[in-house]
Image (tube, rainbow, N blue to C red; front, top):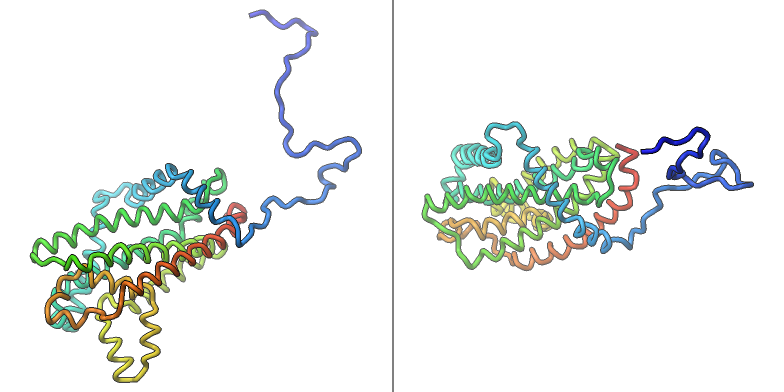
Length: 327
């Protein structure tokens, strides 16, 4: 390779000026007016392009879901077994405390399965809400370095939660095999509707909480307290007829009972119980079946959930421009 001669012109090197070049007669950069980087996002436009971006990054979404599943039980000896042990522990505690000590197990047939059907829906809900709340803060490094739709972080939590609930459903199938009692096929159509209602509602709420937690870290603690209160406002460890009797018969508070039934999770749990609890098919268990039109209620929840997701995504989009700065 020939050597460059002394005094010869140096080879040209490609360079790129960072920022706008200052032309002749223009003021220095420090004297020029500030230009806003994060332009305001319209509240009414942008949802459909965001959905297209999420679809374009679907492979990355799959990677993030796998990361959520692996990181949760990283360096754990039992690994995914913990996904099964937690609902089993809840089931044992509530079955003894509510079923044995308070006597609900003597009234409600197959009380263990009754409990688990409600816990199955509730566990999915809490996994999504709890995971979405910390999803942006927990991935601060990626948020500050790489661009892709930030909605992928909450959605990856949803995907991981769905995988976990499928694993937990194995326990329910084993319970059917042991008791040799199976749910009525005619009610199984409630499950996909209940899952859609749960996912839409939890995704919308999760997007709002994920964005709020970036600016106010107390949101995580508020969610923990709120979910505890919400749990006892949902007919999981007790039957809904006790609430109806207490509010409408003893105290004539029918309007308050309707407010109680307006709880989305109450309708979703009632749907899970009707579809997956074989004990309700018996004469003793029929009294605990909710006699309202759950198909209509779930349809309304799905429609409202779609609107809620749209509103939540627009709020999320308007705030995500400041995520990197806050993190």
